[in-house]
Image (tube, rainbow, N blue to C red; front, side, top):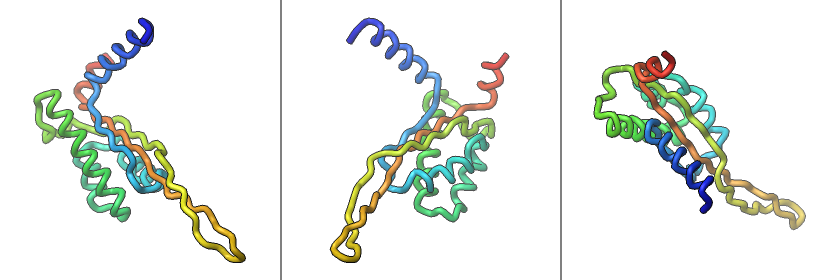
Length: 138
């Protein structure tokens, strides 16, 4: 690895130490379904987001996203040494990217086959405290 790439990788690694996130790879639901939930909780306070996910009608996707959000909260608590019950923690960013796609064939009339694409996604969720965010802006 060249010096320039090594320095860039070190800078990226140092930047991640100050961010609190969790990532879930290869979730077997379509990215479109997961983005509906992601858009719903983006920017929300963490306890409200957990409640919204708990009572969401998209059962399978909301269960996975709730578990991922709890993991991100736990990561924040681990790195900062504080508790999340203070109410100043919120979902700062959430990304849903498409992942691998399984391609299957479904029988069709007259000897044909229709392609069925079973999609999956990657979800990355960032949490941050409002206190830290205000200090960064000043």
